[in-house]
Image (cartoon, rainbow, N blue to C red; front, side):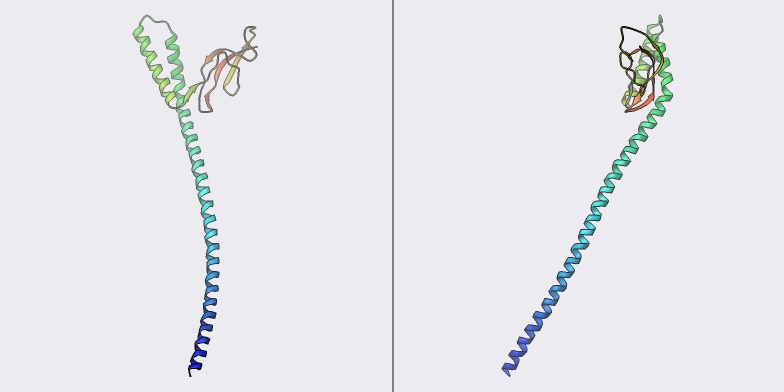
Length: 173
């Protein structure tokens, strides 16, 4: 009987080993499947993160462009006022307090423009650039170089790299 029990125990041990091996193989298969799923999900997550970063950058550029466009629109409506204030400052007057008041208002306008990123386009002594300047006439002047700006009739302004209003200039040679 004892031998029979030993044989049964040995057979049970063999069956347990076979079952354990089968279970182990199933577990390994499940682990491989889960590893593949994790890799796919990790890849998808990385792609989504990259897409989101691109979206944030694109949105930021669009927002900045929209802001610059709005500032440019508002500024272009204020430029004639600034032009008139500059003309008023150049007029001779006996009332110095009045002239100082106009100069202060003009300075305030220019400070507001500068604080919003609006800059004046440089002209006199610079080389003519059709992206920034509009030539209203040309003159021959041996003292100036080719395509050099001699005179400015109206100031031009830009915000960032966008021209709000071209400078009206006289170009030499």
